[in-house]
Length: 381
Image (cartoon, rainbow, N blue to C red; front, side, top):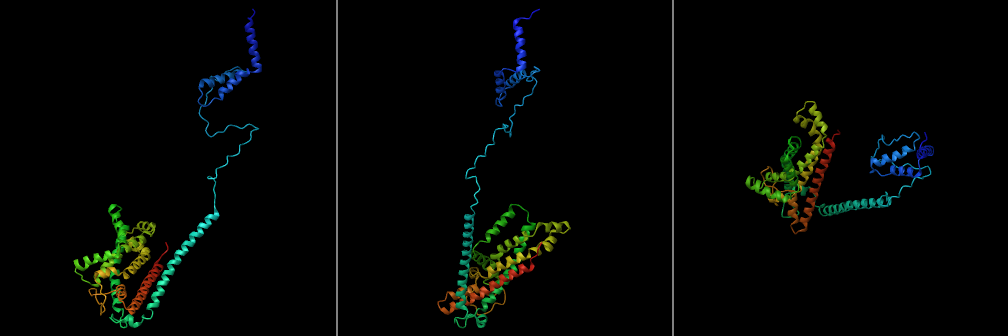
C-alpha cells in the first residue's frame, strides 16, 4: 500500500531536520525567549525549551518536565567571551580620594603649639611682674619686728602678728569643721546613697554651690552665725562661714578621689566577707586619701586668702591684742592688707606689700604640703 505523497514529504523533511538541526528562524526564536528578562512567563520558557527539544536527536521535548528558576541571579556577572577584555575600573572623583595634606596639617600643629606656648608665657610674665613689683616694694619692710609687732597708726611701728594669729585660728577651725563634713558627705554619696532622683539633685546643688561668690557666703554667715546663733563677731563665726565656703570644693574633690578607686577593690573586699564599712575603712579611704588631702588643702588655701566673707562677719582692721580663744574678736591677713592699702601714705603701701609676701609664702607652703602629701600617700593598684 502506497503512502500519500504529503506523508512521504513530511517523513523526508523530518529526517532532514533530524540530521541538520532546526531552521535558523526557530533557533533564533528559542534563544530570544531564553534571553528574556526575569519577568518572563513560564509558558515562554517552555516554548523555547520545546523548540530546543526539536534539535535534540532523540526527539524528546525537555521543556515540559524541566523546572525553571526565575529568581534574579544576585552578585553574578555575565561570563566573558575569550576575546573580551576586562573593563578598567572607573576613576574615582577627587572628593573620594584620600588627600593627606601632610604639610598643611604640620603647619596647623605648629600654629597650635605656638599659641599654647604664648598663652603660657603671658601667664608667667604677668605673674613674674606682679611678684617682682610686690617684692621690690615690701622687701625692706619684711623684718622680725614687722612679723612680731602690733598694729599701729604709725607705719614704722605697725606689725602683722594679730592678723597672722587670727588667720591661723580661722584656718584651723575651718579645717576641723569642713574636713569631716566634706569627706563624710562624699563617702555617703558615693558608697551609701541610693541612685535616685534626690541623690542627683543633691549632687547638682553641691556643684552649683562651688561656684557661688564668696560675698554671698559672707551675707549668709552674718545672718545665720552672727545674728541668728548669736555667736557675735568672733573667730568661730568666721570659721563657720569659711567652712561653708569651701565645703562644696572638699565634697567634689573627695568624690573624685573615691571614684578613682577601682571597683575591683570593693568587690574583692566584699568577696572576702568584709562589710561595707570595713571596705571603706581599710580599702577605699587609704587609696583615696591622697586626692582627699590635696583637695582639702587647696580649698583651705582659698579660704585663707578670702577677705570679703570675713569683713561681713566682723573682722576688725585694728586689733591691739592677739586672739586667744574662738570667741575673741579677730582680724586676718587679707583684711589687714586691704586696710593698709586704703590708707594714702606710701609707707602703708609698703606694709601692704610686705604682708602680701607673707600671704604668698603661706599659700605656697600649703600648696607644697598638698603636693608632698599626695606623693607620700599615693599607692599603685
